[in-house]
Length: 128
Image (cartoon, rainbow, N blue to C red; front, side):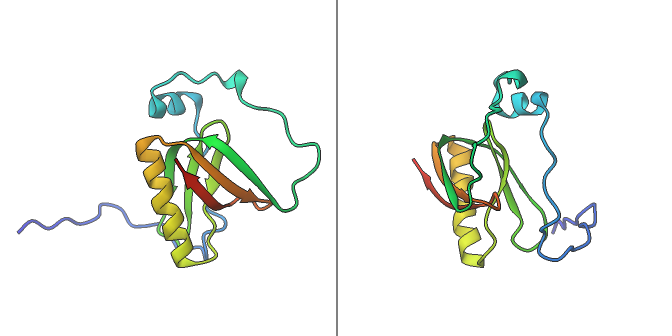
């Protein structure tokens, strides 16, 4: 019987994972993942004039990257044109449900509408 063992130790636990996040992707890495050239100069630069205190819906987006680590409830997805967004970690079942939807959207390159709040985390999503 074959036995597979990890070749590296996992990083030390850091609580709920609030301090750990994925590294920002370069234009070359984004192009490699999506198969398309990325023009950094055309990235959105306009910010809302009034800070959003409650929530904001982002529509017609695509996930082109995923990242997680062996910390409790620490899952991130890369949104085209926006960057890394963390899934809310308020409950185990909630993060699992969002992760299933987000992984499906990434795999099939489906359109995603999601709601994030002032903390920048995704709380709700629809995958089309």
